Image (tube, rainbow, N blue to C red):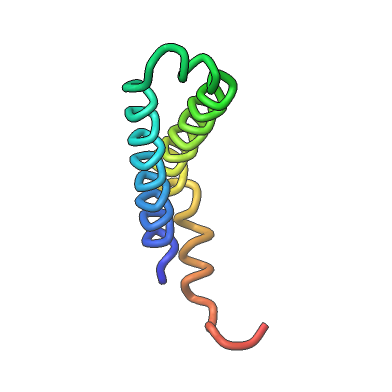
Length: 83
């Protein structure tokens, strides 16, 4: 797998997880206020996790294609077998 393809695959995987987290957050929004209050710490952690995933997706979009290109080409040229 080429390095830039790897970046795209990781970005897509993270986006899928972000969608799943967003779905959970959406379900939580539909809960009663009392139920939300009991889960307040977990909801805050969920939002922090969603923000972290968003940050990692943005980092892949902005740095992976430019910073990995020279290293990626070197990695792509290496033989796949052995050490």
